[in-house]
Length: 155
Ligand SMILES: [Zn+2]
Image (cartoon, rainbow, N blue to C red; front, side, top):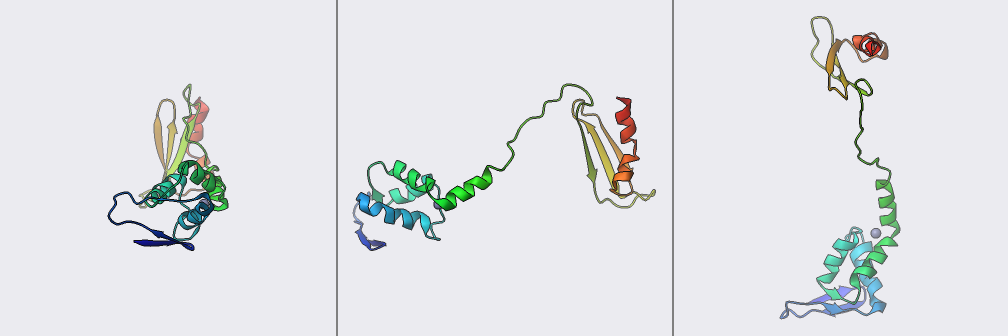
């Protein structure tokens, strides 16, 4: 089987189960471009890129040279920098009742007899004590006038 990598013609024996071609350092960059830079390669990470290249080629210290090439890729660096902006998952520890409360609104629900469309949910994160209040809208004034402030004032 013949394979074209840039201007290199690689002949691979169909009789052998191992078809790795020893690639000189002068031609490794061409292979990197073919397996990483072209749009069909999809800027794979070093592990997948190594896996694909190893199916056809071999050279000493393949993993380190592929990893170095991927680290120097501007597109990969730009993509990784976006992931760093995510907040890490963490656990919020609560030490006593009413130290932290969670408030949410369930919406929209069918209209009740008292003209309420929403349910305001109030939960104490320490005790898991939960109360719900039917409210007609999601306006801040409506929420402020529910029993939630009264419950909070009790503590
Ligand atoms: Zn890349």
